[in-house]
Amino acid sequence: MEGILGTTTVTQIGIVVRDIEKTKVKYAEFFGVPVPPTCDSGDPAVVKTTYEGELVPETGCYMAFFNLPNLQMELIQPFGGKSTWQDFLDQHGEGIHHIAFGVKNTAEKIKIMEDFGSHVVQWGLYGGATGEYTYLENPDMKIMLELLESY
Image 1 (cartoon, rainbow, N blue to C red):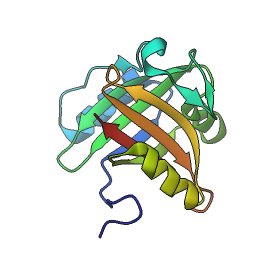
Image 2: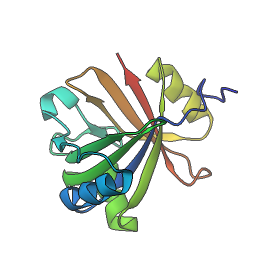
Image 3: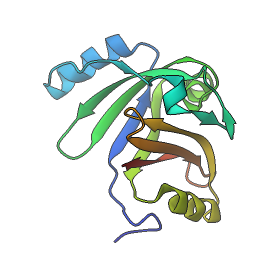
Image 4: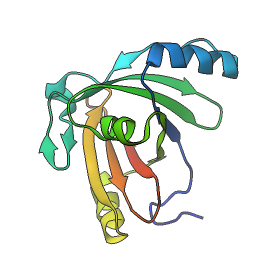
């Protein structure tokens, strides 16, 4: 079974939080794993984040990753600018923000998703531009979907 993205495997769950340092300690205790480091979203000139189609160099977040046997769990604390993370926090409070799928050929997958009724909310590069992420909304799916492509 592959679905419209060519995969049905969820690779990541993203959770938006207000205090990443406090929250990551609790999750580490829950999972019985070491507390992961916190990193930031990167140099704005490199990550080139867009929100609703416009470049937003002031946008950023802190992140911590739990690499579990069957998926990655990402904690996200927004720290500035317009972003889907801040929108979620303002509108819903803390909680599950997105589910992510690893894909190849992001541009093709975005077109497929748009034909499916989704629209791109936010896009950017990650890992020093070694990959790209795309957040898409679809009003009928009730959760943000993320496409992750590592180069």
